[in-house]
Length: 145
Image (cartoon, rainbow, N blue to C red):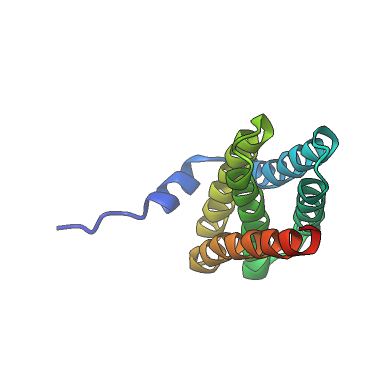
């Protein structure tokens, strides 16, 4: 009996490489733009600081880094977008952030698999972004409240 194939690897093989790269980058760019849009839309200072700090952090993940470190950096940025969206689901852009973070994350995992690199570290980086997002919330709440 043949072992089941990795679904991420199967997904990665069907999508053109350039499309995966574009989706990984575009998801983070649009996610950062949605974060900035929330800053302009909201008048509550802690929310503005939260989204602008995260937008800057996501922008830093757009720096081109090759290999496994680049996969992890891109996945971390995708995670920041995704988990910021989870925090902001009560706002319309928050749902867009969830979608863009998911798109970017899946594309990043698929790129890692396509290059025969282990997607475990990018997956850990994606989830680690939740800790950064939560930690930033705590710091901002205690600073402003």
